[in-house]
Image (cartoon, rainbow, N blue to C red; front, side, top):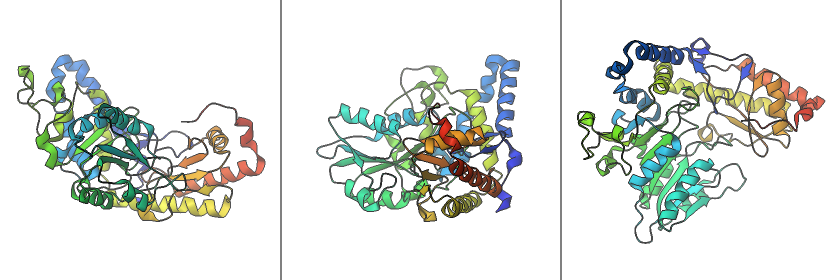
Length: 397
């Protein structure tokens, strides 16, 4: 699997970086693309729009490859929450008793906030699928939540805390059999787990590009809308979603662009799109199946070493590779202090309240030796108790 390890493509920070599921490291190509667009701005000023006008659309083939969609079904725009609002404005059409929304008790809060906004408008409920262990979801509980009074469900492809990977095709199929639209938040899977959103029949999906795709902090988000819904037109309209051929006629009659491009709202951030442009070029040089295989190899190694050397830490990520994303979640009462102590030693993990230490060995740039060193550092901290001196320090992102 060493062919997919491409540390040479990244400007790696010093030490060991295991937080790529929160913010990926910078690809050299991202920096080069931003500098190229900056040069265009400097040289051409407003004339640069000749090169920038269709930049977002030009990225759709590369994004579509990552999520398994046709180019006209995806677009780089907005953020997860903004895109979710836009898609809900289009697809959420409560009627009669079929009006309620479903999410999970383990969702990232912003997804739930967006659903609550629309439920409140329509006098509906947001029902949260419960977790039996506080970390993962059971397929029977997902099925039980998809009742005949539910209009739409939004689920994460990978749970952000535990790393559990859900069955996207299976849940989508079940929801559709029951007359329910289903969307997916792929923030914690795009770039790490191959998807087939079109073939799975997902109605829509949203994601960010700053984790495993490595497009930089606050990078433009992405959305997928299955082509069977393209005739609906966007529920929220903005001038950048207008048909490009006539956009600068400035007519007050909105003519939507074809496909997902219609879901753009305001003028796109060209420099941020440039970083995404460069980041996507990295994935053009590697095989997604190999990324997934090496990711599973690294997370398996990490869990095995934790079992052997760190019995105080409890692995809450599913052991089954078919149910595991790209990171491993470890539960410990002192996870916060351990995360701070690791950072003090040049090892960057991630902490989530109240007791989860997340480690993400990224296939493209992390190594088996780095995992071994991290486990040794944790063992030493637990043996000496040195981490407890940092218990009152600041929060870790």
